[in-house]
Image 1 (cartoon, rainbow, N blue to C red):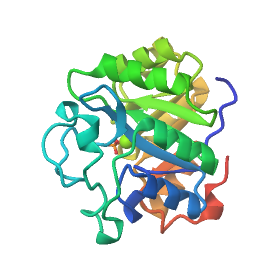
Image 2: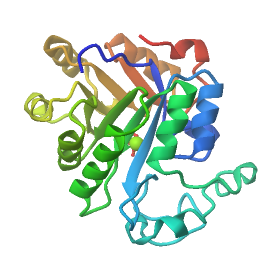
Image 3: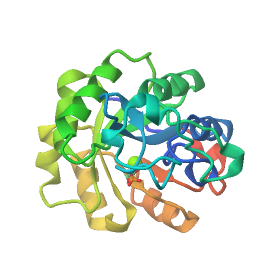
Image 4: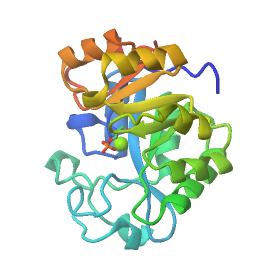
Length: 246
Ligand code: G3P
Ligand code: MG
């Protein structure tokens, strides 16, 4: 796990604000714009298959309705996950994690799979993601989650996959919590990253990455504080040449 190298920028939810979130179209667009890393969210559908979606419900990002965890894969696959964002993307489907990893691998992208379990499914989601990444095509992959239970389950299934623990605000016991899961890095909301915390992380030798950074001013502040990487929606703002590996 040592020696993991972050791209400077991850396209947040696949293609950021330029493509429907958590779709292959978004991932492909990020690659086309020169991004070297993409972040996406992973949840289980009813059949226990990990798919890319952020919300526990289907309404916001697709033409479906109801809970992802109660929807069969076949039905999920019939939904339009692109048309709500823009009609140019109508017909875009909800990808499986397997498809997203293959896509990233083909495009040479670092994939940050954020394990986003539906309520009550933390362990199952971590297991399924861990199983999948343990047998995925080789590629550069980083697992993360707000759910320590999910990350622990993923670790048990795929101990060699690099892990980052996600926080909105960083808790006082972050060291212990990262150590317990043998995480290489900490991801957090940019809003809660103070200079003091950045200094503590540097002293501990823990790289950190911040979401969701959508202005040059914020990016300059965070890189100035030592951020290894930033997650951005603004693929139109940060130039491809800035997306090099640190
Ligand atoms: O992984 C970083 C970021 O994506 C976490 O927030 O809600 O966009 O998944 P969210
Ligand atoms: Mg996410």
